[in-house]
Length: 175
Image (tube, rainbow, N blue to C red; front, side):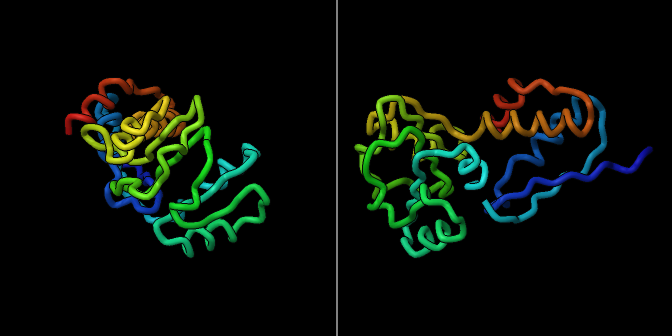
């Protein structure tokens, strides 16, 4: 028997990641032996900035952390501050704070077609998705679908086989 291939998910935080579970499920579909680890690395702004948005505001419970993170990039469209500094109507509100709710965000933060997107996922709605729905966000989503779809794309690149995702998303939600 061949040695298992080695793969990893990288993120911050990452200990809670379901990627090892997902990739084992994909591998089982094709009888592929693999080893999949979770590695801690740093988070998501570069791809957003590459889209050249009019503005990105990083809001954090600790204003100094948001300001420091914004300062790591040389971009006039980027600013940072405490949660209370996120004012105005945004097209995309990306929640990347894990399971914590958005207790200090303004309910008026949603533009008419805004997407409130939580990078976290849970068995039901995350606290952020619940809050967004209660505060009339036009659209909401959590990270479960994104997680499985990007895992499927990686799996295809690595193994040349495109796994089915719908069953894995459903199983992940049940697990």
